[in-house]
Amino acid sequence: MKINATLPEKGRDLRLDLFRGIANWAIFLDHIPDNVVNWITTRNYGFSDAADLFVFISGYTASFVYARMMIDRGFIVGATRLFKRVWQLYVAHIVLFVIYIVAISYLATRFGVSEIIDEFNVAGLVDHASDTLAQGLILKFKPVNLDVLPLYIVLMGFFPPVLWMMLRQPDLTMIASIVLWLLARQMGWNFAAYPAGTWYFNPYCWQVLFVFGSWCALGGARRSMGIIMAPATLYFCIAYMVLALVMTMAGRFPELESLFPHWLYSAFNPNDKTNLAPYRFLHFVVIVILVIRFVPKEWPGLEWKGFDPLVVCGQQSLAVFCVGVFLSFIGHFTLMLSSGSLLAQILVSSAGIAIMTTVAYYISWSKRQDKPLPKPPAPKEARASTSAA
Image (cartoon, rainbow, N blue to C red; front, top):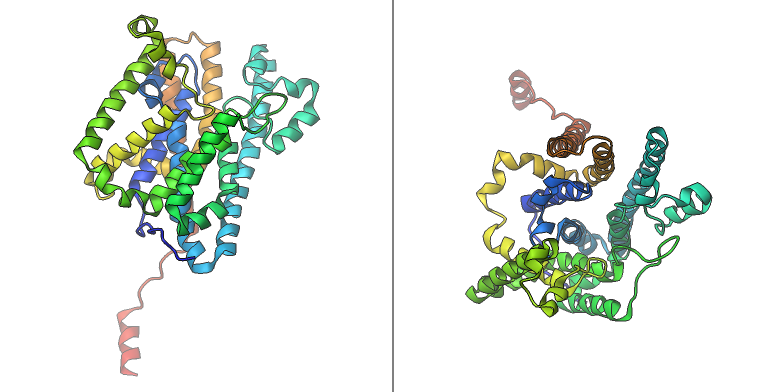
């Protein structure tokens, strides 16, 4: 079939790095309960949050990186490169999984805080260690806060045929993704978890954000510019953002909840994150529209040095994400053992972000050292004698 998608322009899009860095910082902060600092993250002011952003950018980036490869070198090569990335993600998850559960078990025993065993869903390791670890290897068992990476692995694992279709029939592929999402919500489809229940992030539903990212990367956003730039679209986006802000705040403050009829409040609360509620998806689409409209790829502000830590964290996203998940547990544990004061919350949050940023800068520096140094230019005398010869 003919390629109908519009390939993204070559060159790095700093918006992806910036917003992926924001997502990593926000996920770290949101994973620390009873932390006043996480009030700066987007989950408190609308229906979607950093997880939605992370999944969307992952789909966008996967298409940005692998689409041209699949066109130039064929489906098999493109698919194997995608599977190579899946293997890297899986290895990162297993390493994080082992370090995470060992740290939880050790600190619970060392400090006599046995309740964190149940809080972080690792109690099964005590009575059924071998079965629980085996289920962890196949992604069915996940301690608390280790849900995003398995979702990413599954979405990338099934992405090769999706990308093949997206390159040929982008709009039809996007529609099929939406139909699967709505069917999964209606029929109750989800992946089984261990020892009971289902995945916190339903892959059948969350795939629509991943595919939406791919669709935007491969020309969907460009083909929709007429709608995106229309004045009526801007008015709708502003109105919907206000609605999302008010309903989210009503879910956090009972005094505000009492101001609204129950049918309106209950339509948005509690926020259905597991199955990606339609109002949540729409909220994220609105954010994407506003970013495209007001933060173009060529925006000079992206070069501001103040954004560098976020951009570098976005460029080293996988390592920063894994470090952030582990640090969020350490931060939570530290606040449990300390006074949990406002100062302690600020210090723990700041220290975690500083460590994540340091890791990102180190990895970036280390990768540059792996590249060979440029060869020095030949001496003028040597060039002159060569020319004379």
